[in-house]
Length: 156
Image (tube, rainbow, N blue to C red; front, side, top):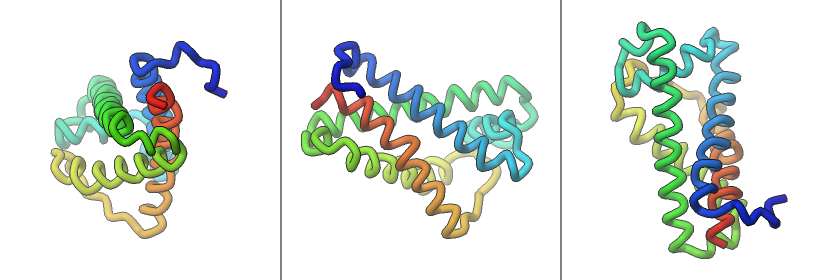
């Protein structure tokens, strides 16, 4: 698929991986939270609440757009860190599927164990084992795998 993609350099792969994985992750969040009564605007505001606290839910479209921007900034940092690790551990570049699944699991763990608890988000979600497994798998497949397949390719 991407074997003949000379345009895919580290400089183009980083933003492309961020865009693809970030979009898939946001679509997943909307799909999971929509049936619970949270429209996409509220999902995006919940991301902004990590910075703004409860005020994010009163900020309308502006706070939702801030949430989208924050989401992609956080993911761009994660993709950059992934690229830095892969550049040093060449075995990961040689095994992009495994690297992607591991990256998705690490991103999920860091977000849920460090970033969200240290944020100003006014909620702490309690997850059932099923929700944790589902969300972990989603991060592995929808975030880690696209990041690895796109961002690690120029480093191989």
